[in-house]
Image (cartoon, rainbow, N blue to C red):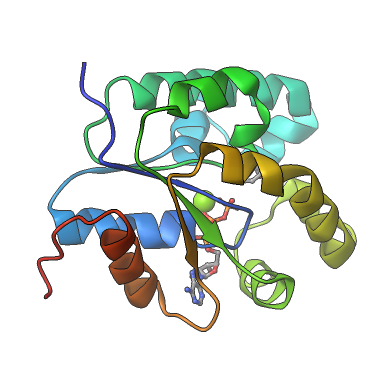
Length: 173
Ligand SMILES: Nc1ncnc2c1ncn2[C@@H]1O[C@H](COP(=O)(O)OP(=O)(O)OP(=O)(O)O)[C@@H](O)[C@H]1O
Ligand SMILES: O=C(O)C1=C[C@@H](O)[C@@H](O)[C@H](O)C1
Ligand SMILES: [Mg+2]
């Protein structure tokens, strides 16, 4: 069974999806994003899943999506921001090259404010983001084999730092 060459974890706005695509292109491998897998399977956007079926249902779909991708996808894999909250998911990630993309609150709020709606950050995004990070930071650190700071870096620079952290060959060097 094939497994990912890089798994990206981190909070909303850390750039997992954006950097993941850059990394996949650099490495010449495929890219998968569990958020996209869930939307495809459910046939609707994530905010609609939260509204129609609730967060617990979304988390169950997410755990299944990570299981599928961690056991069959040989490229770059980006996880949803909350995927690491599930213990079975953290267990699955053990032994895989997992990079925690760090981002300070100010940058994250700037970034996610410009992007698609995120149900957990719909109200009072700054306070919510801080709360999420407090609960999740230890979990991101638990699964990570490397931590990369994204502050003040473009997605391309973050991709370079990820390759360096994992000692993977960067075709751009
Ligand atoms: N290093 C960066 N510098 C500036 N903007 C960035 C950077 N990385 C990502 N962005 C922008 O931030 C927004 C959020 O990025 P992205 O969707 O990749 O985050 P994510 O970590 O996948 O979030 P989620 O957990 O919600 O899936 C996008 O608009 C993206 O273009
Ligand atoms: O941080 C979170 O809990 C989430 C992040 C997104 O990637 C999506 O998975 C969803 O919006 C939930
Ligand atoms: Mg994403």
